[in-house]
Image (cartoon, rainbow, N blue to C red; front, side, top):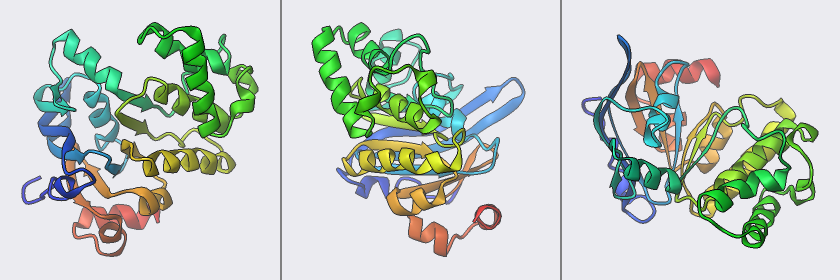
Length: 258
């Protein structure tokens, strides 16, 4: 929105170079405008948490970044590749962008190990040994290596979501997008998933996280973005957001969830 310098902190973020750039992005679903003039730059190795009420455009924004939805106007650039109708550009951006959804979307007929190795073997053409070695490293990283031979139905929701994170990381992305990754989990399972995401953030991964987990935002985010009605209303550090937000819509939203 006018008057909000959404990019000021991104240029000072770790590395100082934009990994993701959204310029005047609009998205319509029929007559409904889901995104309206969205401008946002995400610095390399920056962790940005996006918050806002249901229907504010949060999920639509990150789905446009890896072309699960096609934006109607404006520019989206990921790691110096512009998202266009060119299939080669779309594929290049998707190769560099991992995504974790609310639902785990694991293949139920495949073991955990098979789920994690599928992408590297099919897309990157790795041999089975190389893919499995990486998969086991990643399962160790998300603290479930002992589940490698099990099927998704044998795991808890928190374990399945950690498999989904490992599966996304197996493609060795430069960017990770999280669309409310804990919203489908029972409360006791949320921490284990947030712990895996926190470790990922501290390792230097560029991340955009849509979440209502304000403790995670306070502890891990470099910046917090508040969206409402398809627009970016306010951007700032966690300290700014949770101690001195400036916009009335931001204050109202935070008063309802904190």
